[in-house]
Image (cartoon, rainbow, N blue to C red; front, side, top):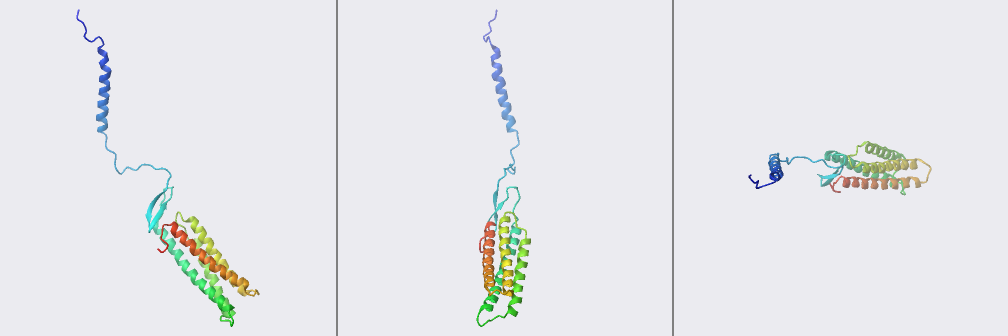
Length: 203
């Protein structure tokens, strides 16, 4: 009777199966196409920064982007308004000073229509600023800017009312000073908006 040299021949089957699975897996993985370098991975709700002007512009977390052209148009309008406000401020201070000095350099008949024009001009500028659409990310700055120029328009109107009233001049002078202060505050808020948009102060 022949003797089986290996009484448990089945014990080699499992290692052979495992070796076959490893070999199959190796060749299968190598046959897969490589990942494209242009593949975009999904990101969370985060913000990033992209170049804009001389600085950077924040990209909203909702996936929108800041339009640099819209920012430039918006800031350009604010600069225009700022320049016109300075002209109105110079006119208002000039009329107020000329009306107060002795001997009087500007009579009431001249001071009243000039102050009326200043008040009307300030209100027009205030309405124009309020009608502007703030670019994404500058909404809070825009609210502050609208508030400042509204104060200026109100002060110009109060200066006119003071001139037309029986007040000795205290209300008119206080309103003129308030107008000058509001114009300075407006310019400061415009500078804040420019900084928030990533623009240099002298851009």
